[in-house]
Amino acid sequence: MTGALGLGGGASRSGVHGDGADVRGGLPSSSLSALRGPAVRRLLALRQEQKLTSRHVRLMAESLEVTERTVWRWLAAAEHDESAAAEPGARAQSRDRFTVTSEVRRLLALWKGNVAAVHRELTARAVRGEGEPPPSIPTLHRAIQRDLTPGERAGLSAAQRLGVSRRSARNAGVVNDSGSKSSSQIWFCPPST
Image 1: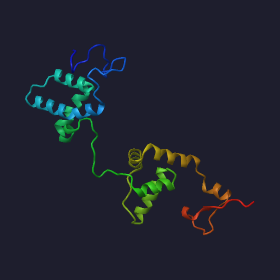
Image 2: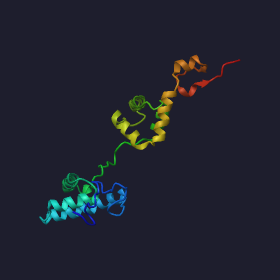
Image 3: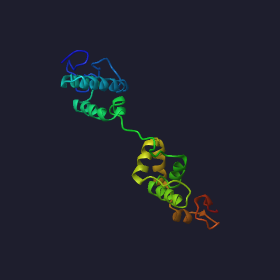
Image 4: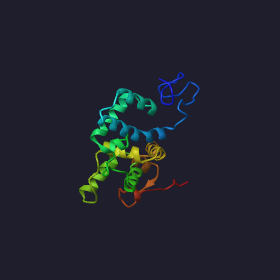
């Protein structure tokens, strides 16, 4: 099959020649994603008219640079969920999913990126009636991965790697005269010379 929508001229499955030129004229992946919805809706219309053939699916798969199996999955999902027909291949979004708040960011900084410690803190606050019950630890991990930039996550990771334990901090001259265990009450006193 050759032509505007088919693969030809030694193109790979992705539609790209060995020299890097795109067979279809260079449609970016965002454009291909934007074409998914109309393509799936057209295939659904053909299916309702009982005119859908595997050739139609193959043609759409090639033009969208996905496998035929993917297009069949999109069609199956679109028959059961209207939003799947609007954005085939997109993950389902829940309005009530957990997102990282500024308070969670502060706790992550306080606990040097330790998600389990943040979860314990949020749980303790919920028990005291100071907030909602926290999500599970895996949900908290996913939200942090999704909502924090790579730089923010790297900074938290570096703080954890480079951080000093409270005991070694005390031994190195960190003073807490108030007897409080709160980190806001701890400060560094340089050694006297």
